[in-house]
Length: 203
Image (tube, rainbow, N blue to C red; front, side, top):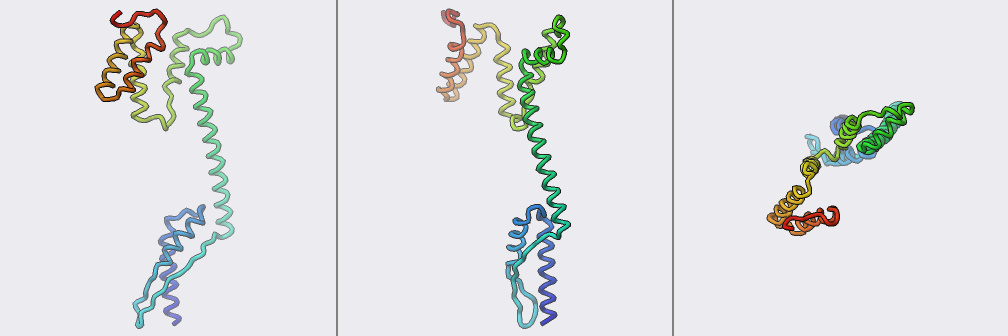
């Protein structure tokens, strides 16, 4: 009987060690659940008569290991908070400096004695353009890149008749794709933003 008990203990220890290798010591509750389900599977020993057994497990960390885990978790929480604040600050600053007026305001704040000699407009616009291209990680997708491309394409047409022609072509493409609601909205865009009295196509 003693040999059978020793064999069962050895088998269960090996089974627990195998499954616990993939567990996170900082998540003790999940580790207990995983190991508990693994050890609850009925096993057998090749004895005569056949011996079948299962087991329950309660996992704890030694005091030193628990203290090290607590210290690690606290450090991870502090780092996560610092990272979140830094990302928020970076995004907020990038959105602010995408406006040329904000770039100039920042420059005056840092150079209060140079009101009479501000940087050239092209320099300000170039700085603002750099920040305007900033995108958070979740916006770096094909869809967002396509939107940026379409925005740049539409902005490249400054002449009102050309701009209207481009929007009419866009609306026609939407109708061809069986998106009449989008086409109607595209046609209405210039009507909403054109100065009153501006000539329209066919006038």
